Image 1 (cartoon, rainbow over the protein chains, first blue to last red):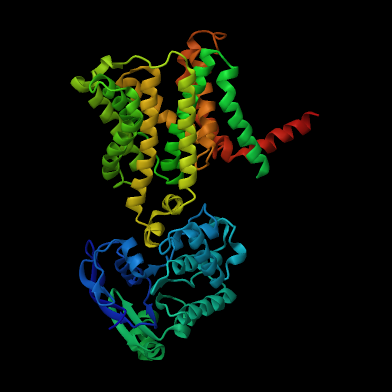
Image 2: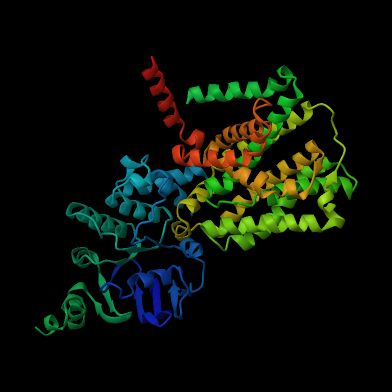
Length: 241
Length: 321
């Protein structure tokens, strides 16, 4: 049984079928990359999984049980947590308080929450910045803060939404290294990413979509050579050549 | 850190001995009212300052508390002091309804909904004459002739309110409130039941505001809908106390309460009779100017911008010497 199963997911906004019958699954322990050109529906799939808006049709199963219609915070308690493409730091809180607030997801007392927060900060190399206000962090730090905050909720499945976007080359390598370390702790990862270096390096499998529909699925190599994927990204001529 | 503790201890001692030293009824009255506003301002601050849900309708809870106390005396024939407990609880019951309706909205829409709620309940209180006495109001007999007991009750109320909120903000609830203020979507995705915790914040806030209302009934011995459900004198005043003192600070509303009651009284009495009479009519205008001043120069309130104020004062001192 897969950890997460997306069955025929449909999301319609007015006349637009943003996600059109997408089906895929994420196995326990793997990193599944979700790719597609801009506006192809990747973030919408994330929003549907975490129920930021209701699903039009289809189902989302977590450990074999439907989580469709559950409140977002309930889904987090079940063990699915997401980061945001446009980072959402709790701006006027310190980095430590940001992570402490999310650690309360699993523990009751302030002391335990702070302990968990320190662990998550340490893991994401943020310990030295713990007393800074989140709004004073540069983008690289904010991206890591998003991840630290997500990890503090002790997830089984981590949804990363363009964690590497906007990072410089050295930060990019750190991000790749961080994601691989997260996987080593046993957390399953579903990642949306545009930067091919990241997605090709870390993914076990890749699921490609365009205009809300699946166009390819397979190992990074298979997907990279798939004509439909090349066409979606580079145009028809390249696909034929 | 240590200087702050010393300041707090000194303030505490001053608060305890004040009415024994200053025997004037007039000044005791002003401080009693200010202490009541410390409680209301702190309660408002919990919801608006920490949780980010700006209420323009705290008169709902204040008036409910006051009327609960009044109705205890006039209809149930028990002491209006029971209202201190029942008033808080009744305000919480009203808060459940307010939260159920208004928390469907966010930001300014929430604020407007609470404002409308305050006006609705004022009209109900005005027209439900069999229960509230309508515009005639409720008149009871004061329990004490001296102001001393009222002073200490108000002091305990103000202290309790600040202290409980201070403790709450050190727990999971406090972290959740601030998270909700900073980003509701992020909070929700991190496992925080934002609807539930917004209501928790509102209930605590309403409870203390209701208690303050019940105290007002006992102390002033007269209420009518235009006073206790007033948009201007209660709801807006609560906001001013919070903003002027400093939102999302523990002691900000306490500072704001004394400043605002001072300003209000100075203008109401036309600078204690020194200025022409018409000045007293302009106190609403002065409130407005004060808000503009605070927003422009002390956006975080007196306590929130204390460092800035100190720097300013210090620089002035240096340049004048």
